[in-house]
Image (cartoon, rainbow, N blue to C red):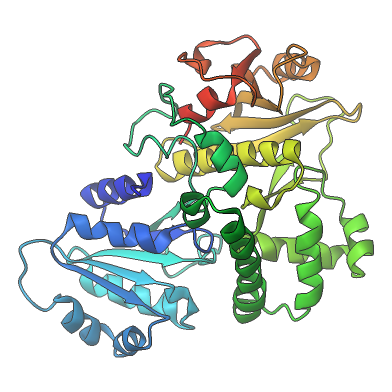
Length: 402
């Protein structure tokens, strides 16, 4: 299956010398995308820290890798080297800095990892200026039918294969369960993925010791997707302090189990500014139909704002709105710190445009306001040509994103 991120890699290497940091959830396709770079050079090498033979080569140092990848020979094309899961090496930052400084302009480097590689938030980082991060997400409705790059954020809509949105909603966007489309496989895959994430990744790469309690927290979050995150209530259920819950949710975020979005407060009198909303990276884990549909849209919007930001189109953010009168709209997408469009998610198109969508569009002066309905058939019209609040088909709107 082709991915839009392969086009991102090609464009990056055509323009820049910096390393690519490709980060994202376990089993979202980072290794597959990294291997797709083989198409761009006859001189391609792949080194995985989890492979003992590859680990010996990496630990052998710069000369060992140069010999393995042909960097010490004259080649027709610039070599591409992929370092997979290299963040598990305790000295990976020093290693990459030395390797990049030695072979800058002589090799194209891709680094992939299941954790966030936790580097671009730390000041004074030794790798600063030597890499560009790209956040890889699972499959989306748009990526199932379009993998070309564009200088525009939103695209013309297109009709997907029949039933593809329903299949995506049922199986989630991780490639293997989506492609197999087998309920029994999906159930086993979800269980094993969560066990590996908590019992292996979090255990090995963090200092969290209370794995049983963090596993309980993960289960509770499945049933609260899209709800306000009440740290005190969660603390009572898990029997730890509120501060511990905050720390554990950050840990689950760093390993791509869940993500939070903050409330938008600019130009909103009596806005709610404390509690975020929490969603799961794998919306297939959300049982309730309406919450799962909302989580799917949240994931599509997060993928879009990450993609647009990482590709340098601007600074984008994902938020929600709620005030103390409990008026709420599910999502706000900002562009360069200004509200761009609002999104309210509904299973049904009946009942007209939600009053809160109209109210908040006027309050924050967003350009667009969409009520995304899952029961509408595809319509071949550009949603973004409408500036009044409007009900649009999910099958149209989502194909205009990434």
